[in-house]
Image (cartoon, rainbow, N blue to C red):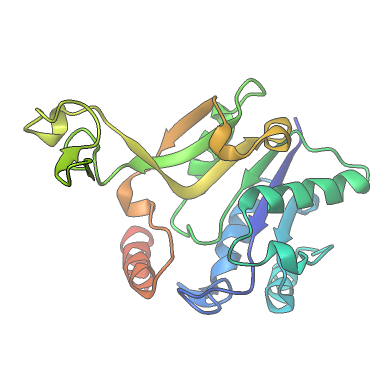
Length: 231
């Protein structure tokens, strides 16, 4: 089975300007994902998909070739992950390499570990659409997540609302954005939201921080230092 390690990193970022090359724990943020991928894959199977020359240069300094720049239509706020994945798969197919699966490593999850990725890869098989890292959801629809009914009153989102202790409610999960192992055939057929065969890999909340705001960045650096002994 041939796997493409894909690191998507566009240049524009509103929440944290220039975040993909902003220093996190002493390295450009994207370098954490690149170095992790290089522990598991040959550099010929690692792709940084970016529209930014600055990000491309950063990847080259880590020892990667950046064979293409992502077109502008795939670098906007509205561009989805699926289009970026298909663009990369099509590029390599045009060069004679067909990948069976894609390991998507978003740079915004610097607290994931090599072991997290190994575990996800070990859980993947061609019979599933995707293995995806998750964390237990902070809001449980059986317990403390509500919707507004037609009469304007709050009603529990799921179930009868009779759970009085969170630990008694069924567990629910949310994607944490850290690791996706995606069947290439499946992503060509449909968006990820339509996948029927998704296997969860649970990660703890303290390593599930996804960098979207300046506060996320501060919390993630504090957690990184606590977990890995940084300064």
